[in-house]
Length: 441
Image 1: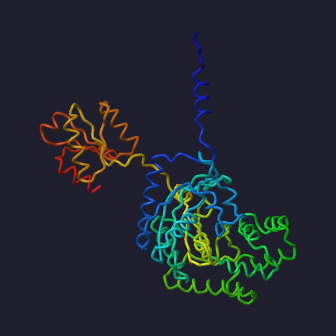
Image 2: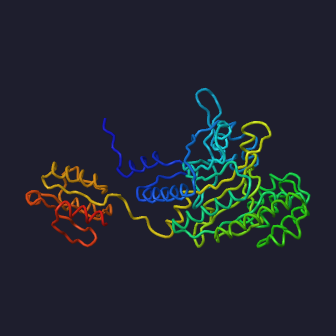
C-alpha cells in the first residue's frame, strides 16, 4: 500500500518536530566568527591585567548552588535554575553563573596562593523571561579577584572593563553602588528584612517607583518605610548629598568605600563610571561594591556586564566563619554580540582567505593548498570537482576574498591564476607572489 503526502505538509511536519527549545538559539557561522573574535579580544584584555584561565563544570550539585552564602533564596537566579537528577537520583543543576562554581573551587583548594586572579568564559543557564539580549543559555566571561580586601581590586576590574570594551569598539556606562550603603539606608528606614527588599529595589529602573512600591507592599513592607527608601534612592543622588543624610554606620562604610573607589578610578583615568544609589543587583551574595555595565546609544537596554564584591561566599563554602574577600565582573557575551550586531551586519561566512579551484589538477592543488596553510594562510579547496563557474559562485557566497585557479597550463608555467573576488581582477603569479599577496591581505 502506497501512502502519498504533500511535500509542503511534509516540510511543515519536519519543521514542527525539529523546533529549538524555547529561549535558546543556534549560533550561525557568521555570528560565531564574530563571537570568537570577541572572546579572543576579551582573553587578551584579561591576560593583560594578569588574570589566569580556569574552567569549571556546567553541572553542579544542587546543594552547592543553594548553599548558605550563595545567591540566596529570594534571588531570581535561584528561581530560574534548571534542576535535574542523575541516574543515582542525586539532585543536580545547570550553573546559573560562574561565580558560585569559582567560590566552590577556591573553598576546596585551600592551597591556592592569594590573591587569585582568574578569568573563565563559558555557557550558563537560566529559565527566565526571554527578550532582546536575554536568552536561557548564554555565555558569560568572568574576571574575579580573590583575596584583596580594599577597593584597589574593584578599581583594577573596572579599568579592565573599560579597556576591553574600548578594544571591542563599544561605548559603555558603568553604574556603581555599594550594598553596605543600601543596607544602611534600609536600616535607617526601619526595614529589617533587607534581602527581599533589595531584590525589588534592583528593579527600580525597569518598573519605576510605582512598580517597586506595589511589589514592596505585596512583600509586606509599610508604605511609610517604602516612601523613605525611595526618597533616599531617587534618581541622580550624589555621594555628597547622601553623606549628609545617611547616619547608620554600615551606610557610612559604604559611602567611604565608594569615595575611595572613585578616587582610584580618577587616578586610572576610568571616565565611564557614575554613582547610582538605587543599583542593587538581585543576587544575595553581594556584600559591598556592586556595578552594572550598559552600552551607550544601543537598542540593547539590558546590562552587558555586572558584578560586585562577595566577601562571605567563599568562606561559608569552606566552612567556619573565615572571611575571604572576593570581587568580580561577569560580561554577557550574547548581549555584547547583540550590541555589536545592532551597529553592523555580520557578513563573513568563511574564514578562508583563498579558495583553490583545481582544473583536473587535484594532486597539484592539494600540494598548493597545504603550502598556503603551512605559511599561515587560511585556505580552502574544491573537494567536489565542480565547474569554475560554480566554484566562483560558492566562494562569492561565502565572502572568500580570493580564488586561485590551477589548471594544466598554470602547472606547466609553474604559476597560478589569482582572482580578486571583489574587483574581478585576475593575475598570473608564481606561488611566492601569491603568498606575499595573501600575507599582505
